[in-house]
Length: 194
Length: 315
Image: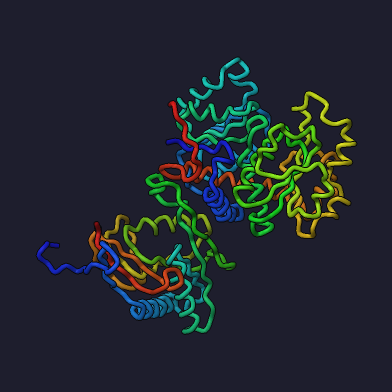
């Protein structure tokens, strides 16, 4: 992008990091509702699906998707969380970090269609780690991927089955997903790099 | 900067809580069909045991293997040490083999600290003389937290051979860091001279302390370290400081009975107490693997350790 183009970011009132809101609460709500319907369509009613969120915000999104699917179809959908920290390929590049929670629903993952849910799809490395983690927990019939934001720049041959919003970004920018349960409000922010 | 786990005093409250929280998440690995994580693939952990210890060595070995580390076991018997090799030369040998972590058990207090000056990897103290055994204290704290919900504000009574016990010292330091109140109970001859400087209460009267204890931890009388008569007879010791069923009846309903093992049934603990549902002795063994996985992960899992603050100078 040339310097002459209109700057997409305005400085935030509180400091030097400029960020712009890409999705607001109603947009996120609509995107999740659409993804819930797409999941039901693709899995023919979602009878044998398990929703697994990747901590932290993927878990919240999985809970919301499970609620929406239940509202539409009238049956509860098993959901849980899958921590991928121990399977990451960049562990040795940073100090050891705290682990997230892995909690499988009692139904397990064997012979089910697992839908992985992450907030942002970027390099694809988190999803690679999630696939490895899943492999140690059982043998799903199929694995699908849902993400609220796909920001491009894939480093591995991975793509999402369900996308809330395709967001073209520069590698210098940061995409942050805020959810009410964790951050106090729903939003997707695009922050300029420093 | 190098990071080691040599003393429970090396751990800040945040470090200790990070280890316990990590262990909490790792506990589920034991229930999975594949009890293995790829995290320490390609890393080498050496178990350097100069003293006999089956349970601690096996526990560390299981922990390292569950994290996919390569484990080399080195026991002093039948090794170059029995041929007269010094600790330093042994350390340099390990260094040449590229050990990322060294787990050491040694009869001399302070040996792990010396070793930490000579190797590049992280040193984990698995018991040194009568000094410390920090991972035992961590697994005890973890066991208390799982059973009682929280360690903070709990009253923990440690009974027995405090003088020769590295478990007691590490537990006093760690449990105090975590906000528990510790009381040590023993005959006067089995207290170390400087026990007055420890951050805990001291009592000679077991029966008086029992009703106010949330946890009673019994220690083994370490006959092998006793070269003098510390009490008249084993029978008398057992009558005054052993935990039998009537004494267990004096404890609050929710209180736990713990023992780091190996235990001498009939001496410090009666068989019916050891086998009661309030006893956590078998749980402690299982929790030991989980807590040691957490320690190894936090020390060796990243580009630099996330716990421990010992800085070794004079490399």
